[in-house]
Image 1: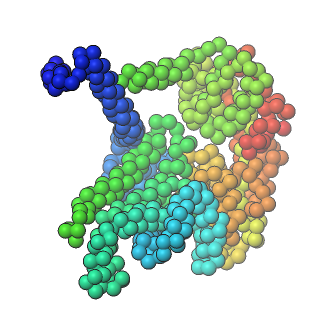
Image 2: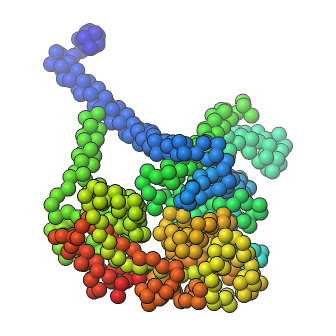
Length: 323
Length: 271
């Protein structure tokens, strides 16, 4: 500080009177102080959300780990039977894990082509006016509360599936995947569209100038250039599907069987937690088992997010040279 | 950092305050099945007697009776009668649990209105829920696959079903799960193949109630004990209740006061 003052004095002594100098330095100090406060404020805000995240994860583990005193990790993850309240209880979540994976995989096979192709159409093919009209509508699909989508699946889609396919119940893997696809399409579409739209004009023009058709430009130049964004969009869409609770609770059926067809009822992990948590006695084995189920679910979504992050960084398009 | 400390302190003091018990306070703990009744009645009671504060929590029947024995609660809600071991432990600790039946729980099997089946015996119900009987024609109905709808295993409704119908056997894993009585009604009313079970208070026109062992589930058959899938719900007090506890129990048992909330909560009132 003294050093700075000395410098200031030397530099300004040529054209500043001493009183003026004091005011200047005072203002400088004031501004620095404010700067520091603002810095601290933002640090605090960032810290709050990080702290909350860590606390949640911490409690998730505190409440979930004690179940492994009752069953081994292997029996918990690969046990075929989930009878948490019978005597003796069985805590096997394998059918639940399979259900979650099946529902996510199947909804992705529906949502990815639809989402990405809609994004390509909107970003590259559609006229500007149409794009401005359709994009908000697709995004509005994301604004639908999941309970409404679940209700739709339960009341409209389930009886429809039952009548058309002649199956025993319309509350099944297929129905749940369909509803989850509705929920992940807007995420996938909107994020991919942003990625595709932001591919720089010069790359496109270069491709077209070399004689490539519009379609060739799209699939040889534009899609590779925005691949990182599209992949991130897909993975975020999938992690939305795997974590979604209300929809699977309402329309997946809830049987703890390992599905053998897409029309079998299933019970994904979040549905089990949501259905049983409210009435599981506090700190009972059942309670711990549900938290441990939550840990498994958390690890799944964490993996998805880490993959998304990795892909986004690794295949990031930096300038035109990396194409 | 100072602000964080303040928040932490504020939170900590809130938790501490919960622990302090004032006079004129009533603690109710126990069965989650009785919880809706206790909550509704407690709210109404506090409206009429603003000087009494009632805190209601649902930690399960066993938990409630345990806290009655430990003396941490005034009233223990329970969906079953006290067990011998619990009664013995209570007496050893110098406490004498007194039961009051406050309501009845009556569970009715329901099917789609188009289903021609009218009655199922308890054995047939058990076989269906164990996954042994898979087609309606095996129990005198149409040639349709049976879709079994069950409740989440921690609900009181499931508990009754498990003890009165399943008799130590497990509901097979292929049964559909719904998380509430209302959701079971919804699922059964939309599916010709389905069978489910719900509390008597939730039966409406969209589903068809079945008779069990030839007896129709109703308030009358529940109260005279002839309907097999029913049980009493209890509140236990420590010794014969006094003061606030007595007033509250009387309020619960009053036909025009507490008992009307029993019906509102979907259970069978005593009168």
